[in-house]
Image (cartoon, rainbow, N blue to C red; front, side, top):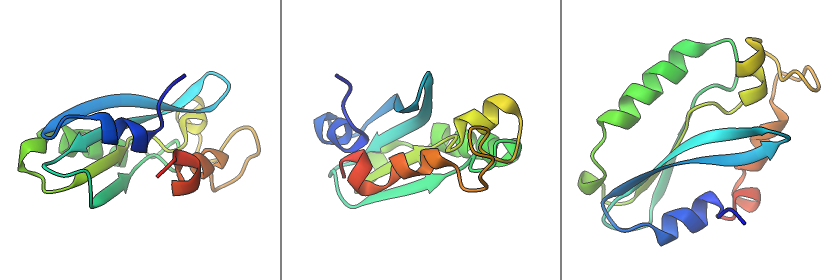
Amino acid sequence: MALSASETLAAMEPGTRSVVDLPVEDDLGVPLTLLRGHAERPVGAVVAGVHGDEVEGMAALGDVARSLDPTALAGSLVVVHAANPAGVRAGTRLHPPDDGDRPACCDALQPSAAGA
């Protein structure tokens, strides 16, 4: 059984980085980069890819995530690279299963669903 994002952060050694997929629907996962600083908390989050056809924000966020040094962080950071993986795969703004402008997969990112 896969760990939630918060369980993964709690298990990480201080000053480390982990790349995981948060399962959300069928064969899709939301790609996350978890950066654990000196302490687990406070936890911040940055999100890109809510609209699957807006790739610039996802690219920029990937650059930022790679440039961060987790040993320089006091707390932790959750980087959500593509909050709408179905839209990214389809190259559409909307969430293909329901044509919603707010992807259903965002529900998985809520603290109660992510285990935070």
